[in-house]
Image (cartoon, rainbow, N blue to C red):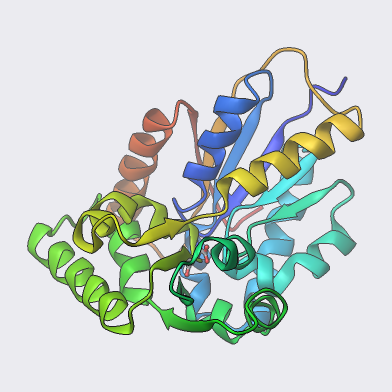
Length: 275
Ligand code: DGL
């Protein structure tokens, strides 16, 4: 038995649907979520910057709450920094990688699409997954930074018309390539699954990695005798940037308070640079 928390990290709100899976299936666990908002978006950073950002987060998490397991609920950070994190974090580290293997089993017409960040597409890991699991299939990869921005900023800068235009344009791209199976290779995209699905129709299957990641966490907790018996207070934090003015900080606080409430977490507040 181990009552220490399970930590979940992402560059922003993208990892929260993964945390929700864990909360629903592991009700005895305490969860700590950190949105690395200071370094958002990971998809536009260099691999070194992403590695250094997540290593800093892992170190700070250890100091703040000594998590027993770390979930990197971000495809970009996972494909770029998992090895590095495993070398510096003392407990098990579970990453989120695009559900390419599942897509190969699900496609009916052999046309698969992967929506991700540019870094995930360029990182080499995705190509390796495609080569291993998709021989004989056509796989299109699309970098969608506009979708990441849309999801992350929607709460503070809602723009229904702009949102519909971005989603319609992606639905058109997917349809024009004839993909019947689309991998959501960025955790932020889970927030637009329903809208995309409505635009694409029932013929197109959208896949994420929640089940695989959640089951892996479950297995590691059981195998390592790391399960908790009752939950403590689960919290959400975000990293803040000292260059933000008070109004910007207030905006981020308002947003993260909203998401903490939505996902059943206590609001832990900002982690400033001056740690
Ligand atoms: N949520 C992250 C992912 O799954 C990326 C978003 C970002 O660019 O920071 O790749």
